[in-house]
Each structure stands twice: as C-alpha cells, then as structure tokens.
Length: 314
Image 1 (tube, rainbow, N blue to C red):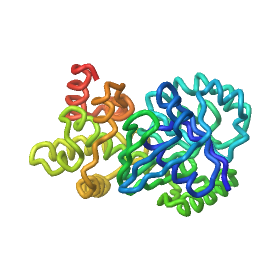
Image 2 (cartoon, rainbow, N blue to C red):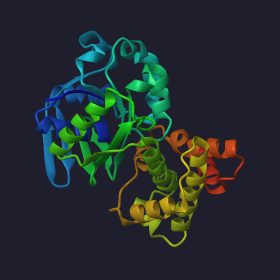
Image 3 (spheres, one colour):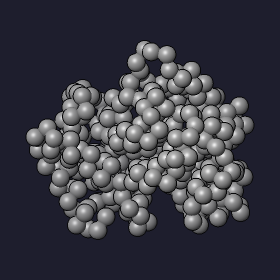
C-alpha cells in the first residue's frame, strides 16, 4: 500500500483521495478554512455519478503538516492545488520539501507548475501530470461533486531521458495502483507535450465559459462560440512552439473533437467565478499570451477574452 500526501482537497484532490482511500492506501490531505474544519469534523464525502464515497482521512493545514510529518514519510506528494497557489505554497513549504527526496507529482492546470517545482525541489524529483475529462468542485465544506472519466496522465518532467531515474519505477507503481483504485491512468514519455495538449483545451473553453456562463458542450456546439473556442485553441497550438513542443493542426483538430464529445461539464474557471474565487486566468490565457508575445505572433481571441474577464473583475 502507498502512503500519499494530497496537497489540496478540492474537487480534483478530494476525488482522487477518496478513490485511493477506497483501495486501502493511506492518504493524508491538506486543506484550509471551513473546508478543513468540515473535513476534520465530518470527514470527506464525494458524490460521483450516482456513488457516494465517504471517508475520515487525516487532514491538516500546512503548519500542522510540517509539525506532524517529514516529506520523506510519503511515497509521493501530489499537488492538486490551484495553479494560482503554487508559488505561495512553495514559498511556505519549500524548505520542508527540500530537506528530503520524495518525488512531487503535479496534477494542476497549466504548463508552468512543473518549472516552479523543479526550481524549488530539483528537476529530478518532479513528475508532471494532468487530470483529464474531470469536472469537480467543492459543493459545500467537506462535500465534493465530481463528473467525468477522471483519467490521469503522468510522466517524468519534462520528458523521459533514458538515464537511470528514481521516478521511473515509482511511475510504474503509481500507474498500477491508480488503475487498481478505479482511476484510469497511463504514463507518458513526453509529459510536457501532454500538458500542452491539455492547455489547448483549457484555453479554448475555460476563459470563455467564465465569460458566458456556458458549459463545455454548449460552447463547442454553439455556431459562434464554437468558432471562438477553436480559434483560442489554435492560438495555444502556436504558443506551444515557444516551449519547443511544436503542436500541429492534427493536435488542434483532435483536441477540439475531444472537447466537443465530452458531456456538458461546467469548467473549473466558471465554478470559481460563480463562487467569487480568483480565476486561474494567468495560468491559462496568460501563459498563451506570454508565449505568443515571445514568438512575435498575435493571439487576438485569447487577448480579447482575457481582457474582458479582467475588466469584469475576474
């Protein structure tokens, strides 16, 4: 059995934690505020496609965590925090993480979390990852609602080197354990490529959904908004070239058809806007705009939607 630290018990982290706890793995969670208090008092409840998963996991705030554990007490540390929190959490816990050698797996939106982790703990400890086809949010403190296939793709960041690496045997162990826990999981030899493919989808639907209030299916099947989704995805494909990933039109068309085929999912950015929380706008649209500026190419659709959201106070 594995011992895992899930940093961030929101929609994504809470769901995967519940699945792993069901499979008898030991999972420690971090949370804060009312959600932390509810988890301590009443436990974790996850509603997933007609099922209810209920557990009483160990849960701490960051100060309690570092008093109770060392990083090396865990087989892997899984980051499921909002991308907007990565820098501040590393400022807070960087010294604690640096003391040990446990690998850190990011399951966060965007392509800039892994570089931040690599700078904080060393590149040989970073596992990049993405949660695919999952929509999840905290319905109320202690209670999470999730839908979708909830798949995971992960791999040594930025790509497999072929040299001996402690991450490779761990990836095999994690992939097997996650699949056995009912989490469809595969590993990739080029995780940065996979992260950019997800960003293509995220930039296509997340900002526009927050602006319009529409779910993914409504956006992608709308005669006008669907064109904007495709155009923002195309701008993301261009932006990938700044990182040497070089996505192509085939990736664009595949990702567009994939998001069109999804069930109607309310994006995380739309949920955050409805709840008055900060949006991961800089981690998604901002990433695309910065890369396009470096390349000297225009990204008018992303720039416009980004500006409208910023003007609206997002």
